[in-house]
Image 1 (cartoon, rainbow, N blue to C red):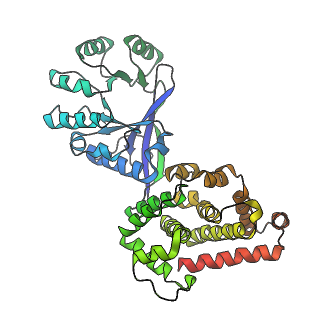
Image 2 (image 1 turned 45 degrees about the vertical axis):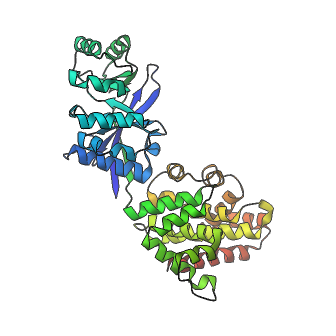
Image 3 (image 1 turned 180 degrees about the vertical axis):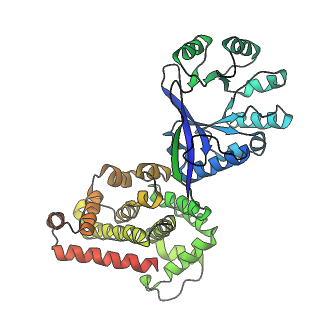
Length: 403
């Protein structure tokens, strides 16, 4: 499933990017859809933070996100990382005691809070010490009215953001008035972005994938996630009881499975099921190809120690090499989202190192590029026949673990 959003940049006085405002959309029409504001906020958060991650959408800049009265009072902003978000209170919010308590709590927890399209009234006076940014609409208010509003904001120590600035004269006026941030068509129109939305189960698998690709691998964290998902637990027991491992006795508990498999195999198991789940809407061949590459790279790392490639990292790199095709997103965004380690990033993004060479060898075999296969075989000091046979065995292995 594809979700859409618009993002509009926000700049500082030097016209340097400060943040983006994220706006929910339901297609390529760059207009707010005909849905309830609460639903729009919820869907924006679900599809951005819990699918691709807000930081992947903003390039690690802050994201201004609109919140309604109900979403503020229900604690919805706290689902988002405080370092990444500016909690923007819509102009329709009433200055009630409940809203005041929620805003104060957010500020005390370290969130940045902004008021959207703000026009001062005495009921808002107690809020001002807890507000970081006030946005003022240059289409709704004249310069005289804006000056009056700013004079009325006694007790406000934060910054002003000029919204809907459409030409240089308005930008110049805003600078003279003391505005620090600027947003509007003078700088850039909202840009439509589309991303793939994840199901609830796929989000679990993304979390697992993050844990196994991180260089500070922690098996206890992985076990805790597996334990809370019945489907993953069942697949783990099937995996460890398969003919692959030729156990003398069946494994009957999750704890026993984790102990028996050990770190390397648990890491492999999690990576395989996560990749398969994330590619469930794609052709099976794409998942099989990812697993075949993983096994092939792992075998090369085990066979040829001259390159110093760690087999587990080689396996994970091969498995993630088609993640962009499985997820319909840029590979760099996805690797940032799962916090993949430097060794994997180097192999997949920079195309450097032994693992990158192993992957290019796999691609040459897949494309039946005999010149490249010959060069790779010579470099690996293997007969071409053995190299191709190794890939074919990896492909058979991939087919067996998918069943």
